[in-house]
Length: 188
Picture 1 (spheres, helix red, strand yellow):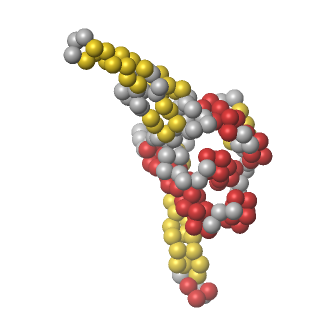
Picture 2 (cartoon, helix red, strand yellow):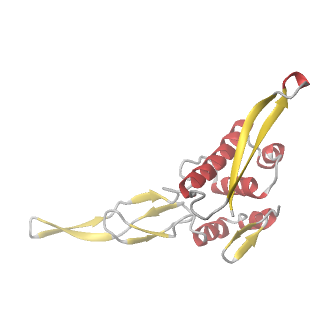
Picture 3 (cartoon, one colour):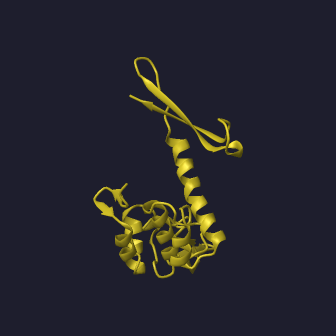
């Protein structure tokens, strides 16, 4: 298994990704290019297009407009729309810095187990944080699989099914296994 991420036009290993995350600007440009974060949004109040403020990690509308009050007087007002750049994304509820969370996610994607000690030593994370983040990564993948899975089989197709029981023998004797069954199917 190769330790690289691939998408249209790029192929990265964990060291290349580490270089990308060195500066905030290069990290955000990578996330914008891969549509993880939005570079622009439309203001909910005045419908103006707003650019992301990378330094403050937010969108803030600064448009001025004139409001007509009682037909004759005009009042100059400023739009007060504000939104975090992470709203509606993978990072919305994340409390750690974006650099740490993206590096941790790339470690989950690109490295083979065991990752536990390496992540704790590399990032200085607590065991609880590490387990929570990697559980979140697994949960997102499982959610994607459930939403994008298709039904196998149908007229004229052949489906192969196999199963395996994962566990250990009870009291290290006999054929009785305690554990879990895993089933898989493949359509030719």
